[in-house]
Image (tube, rainbow, N blue to C red):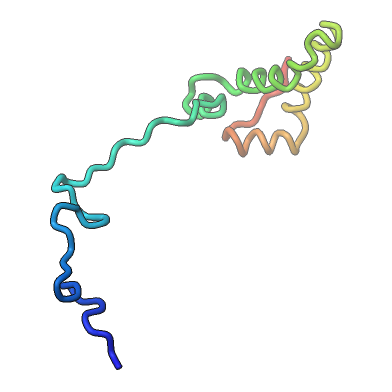
Length: 113
């Protein structure tokens, strides 16, 4: 035994779809437009190196500064300078770190003089 009118355009006899409501997912009569996505990412130091805005040395100095800024006021300025110089030298001479820097920036760091 079948049930009549299921899945048919016209509803059961005597019942018709509303005429004053747009169908779900229907058209508003206006053409579809895609709005430009808002910029959500901030420009990173790595992006600035790739764009040529800052040098590799400036990038590495910023990274060393960021990595050690939590030590300011905790250790003496001489100790902090020693730690920063050691980190910076390690970035320029340690083969693993040199490879990481080269992979990220496309350039190898030069040892400080």
